[in-house]
Length: 173
Image 1 (cartoon, helix red, strand yellow):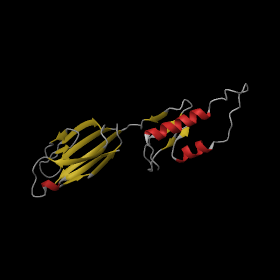
Image 2: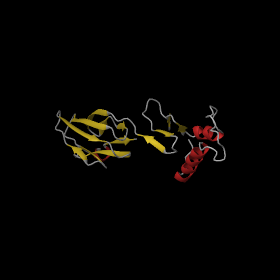
Image 3: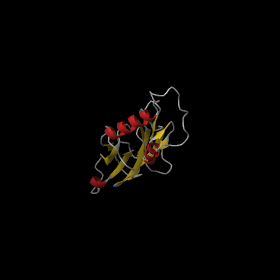
Image 4: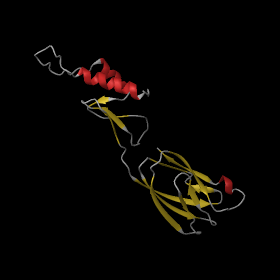
């Protein structure tokens, strides 16, 4: 998908709104045409639509941000729908399961963490989240994934020679 600078988007919006102005030298109003102008077709090719929403980006089965240009010419972005994601995070010698957690920005993440074989703990870098469940105990933490990016989940209780490699990843889209 093509990316445009804010200046280029503003120019396209101005052209779109200007295309809707009536002729000041005419006493008759022209009826709106049903055919799309060349500009509207070009804007639709890059994912900007007039008076309707259309997906921006790619992905199957994912919530997408949508953009549209209304008749006033303002570019608007609708927020992604947020949801609650529950993850049962199991910790055992030198691994987390699951090793990757993927959520959308704004989702509420509930982590039910447990140590399987010996004492473990975890921290999510960038989120100030950590817990140290005893073996067999479940510790539940809930937070909103409000920062976009890849965040390393690390074991915070020394558990042997492979402790430094005991990581997982939280991906917030």
